[in-house]
Image (tube, rainbow, N blue to C red; front, side, top):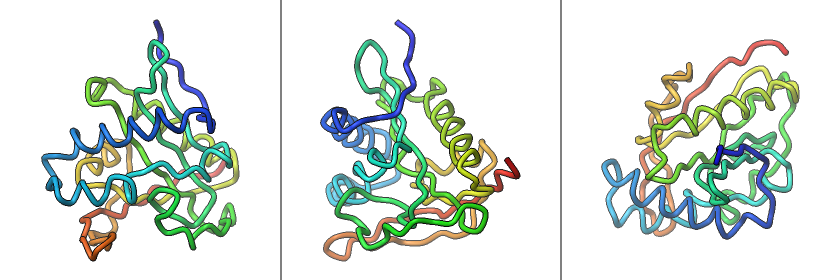
Length: 180
């Protein structure tokens, strides 16, 4: 059966929560300790249901199962699930503010099959169609090489502070989308 790219809905939440946790636990294990992943999964690495409400979060299904997800946002929040950075929900201004690229996760058995690229291409196109000419993202150490291959430029390395003062090393990246 072919892969199906579609917008995620609230009916997909349980499948996406499970996909995100499994993806992060396995694919990010070389860059982050188990203890850090224990804190990050469910906070920084979690589904933000506002993206579903905004219809800006994609998923790929294969044989009826969620195998990849990711999207973009017109809101100020740069990363994290529902409870993480909840105060950064303000709408951005297209053409002035950069869109946010958010929450990319792939099932470990489907990694390096072009699924992330498919979602990133759709996200960038949707952000451009909404009037955004550039984007920003906060990449994990694991994800940064993927984004760099797609023209994203590293601008800053930083440690995000999670629950209990746990530091999550991440990389801020930007890309000019150009005019619509």
